[in-house]
Image (cartoon, rainbow, N blue to C red):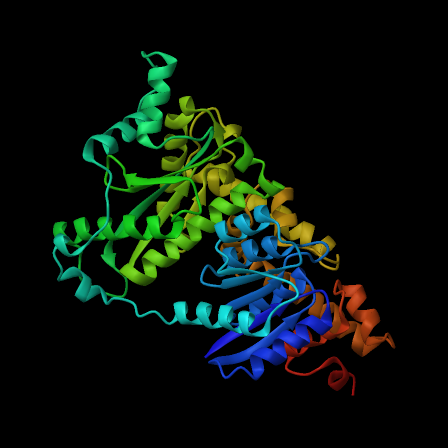
Length: 443
């Protein structure tokens, strides 16, 4: 049974879609409704949501931003986008970010239920058991790999300073032959674990060869045709993913590209862990313009992964999170720890002063500290024991409880005071947190 979250700033549409789903006969458990992106994110954080059905135009946070943030919180959440605009650019971006469908209003009931049915069926696809996978020989796999010489040329571009000795036409020809057609680049590097999760069995050389092959396949499946990316083996046997944009793609809809990269990294880690049964560390670089900086991106991905290897419970690291530019040479673990502690303290102070701000998001807090949202959440949980958003909710709930018990303020006034736009949404969070509704506590 799957749980579905329906999001639209028009309550009648939410209720109509929820009614359709309830009477559809599909294998649906709970159906939740939210009237804004911020409400929806609360549900993603505190409930087991499998499928998100969201309108694209919703005030402060649009549907694609919601989808992107939801996938960073829980990479397995699938999304169907609903729009009143038949704009190819929007549809293209939605599919690229992983939407399972892009439906145009007014919705046809059968088409909508078919879309939901297809999304749920894909979640039901059986997963090959790891033991079965390892008993196969490489001949059973049918995936086109890069030719060894092409793989070697790509790695040479990543490792050596860019000093072309050929004419501009020859260089363009070489880059096109290698599949490098963009002008903006980021490099993601994934290192596979050396032991199966929840097992004592160590990976043999043969296992490692097959796992690398399968992990490369997972990366290609995830990126598919939606991203202009090259997936290939690194010189050390890791998986390299070179993501590239042309000028038009880079400016597309002004979406936050670092958030997109983190979303890809988290999805990659999740799927390799789920389907292959091994842990991974993913490091990714900043975005730079020009092929002459590919070797810089490679060093950045290595540094991000190197820091990641020292952490036991976090898996996707962005080079830009560590403020390396603040140091004349690579910082020691002690210096990075000191920097992390300062980020957490700054975050705590900011939240203590702003937890009742309407529409507060982790992205707002992360921006203040110049780090990515998920890394900030990791640091905060590691240092305080609280998930960052749990801490925000804790402050809001404690304040609202005090107001209920000690004042005559009405529910909508209290909701407003602690940062919720909707009294109904406030009541749902309150009951989830305390086990009783605001009115029951008042009595």
